[in-house]
Image 1 (cartoon, rainbow, N blue to C red):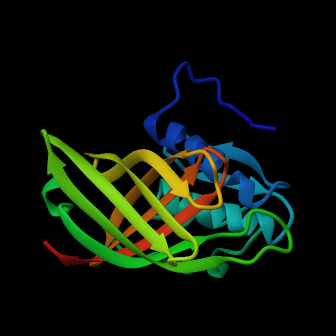
Image 2: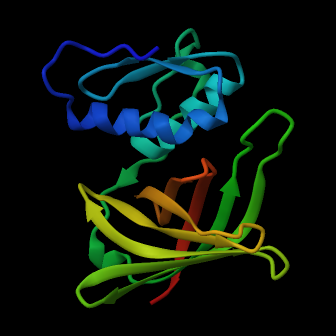
Length: 202
C-alpha cells in the first residue's frame, strides 16, 4: 500500500523515489514503499533480504548521494556511499568500459555479471548511446538517446538479445561517482540493469 501525502503536488524528489520503486520492486515482490517525504527520504518494508535488495536498488537509481536505512534496520547496517559528482553532457562522448550486472528477479536466481562497453556520440545535436555486453554466444546490445538533467544522465532506448524475439524498451539513470559512471535502469519486461563503467577512450 502506498501512502501519499496530502500535498497538492508531488515534489521532484518524491516523483523520482516513486519512479525508483517502480524500477526496483521486481527485486523484492514482498516489499512495499511505506513512506516518501517531500525531500526524497523514504522507507520500505518487506521480508529480508527482499526489502534490502529493493532499498539498495532505489538508492542507486534515485539518490546516489544518500543511503537512508530501511525501516527497522540500524543506520550502521548501510555503508556510506561514495561521493557523487555533477555530470555535464560534454563529459559523456567517448567509450566507457566496465561491468553490467543483472540482479535476480525471483527467488533461486543468481546475479549475472558480464563485461560491458558503452559508447556515447553526438549526432544531429543529440547524444546517442550504444551498449554491447555479454558473450558472442549470448550477446546483449542496446542503443538510444541520452540527456543530462540536474547532473544525471537519463537514457532511453531499446535492448536486443538473441534469446528474445522482440525488442524491449529500457530506461536508465546514472551519475558520476569518482571516475566511474554508475547507472541503474529497467527494461519493459522488468529486468534491472546495473552498469558500473569507466571512460577509456575519447
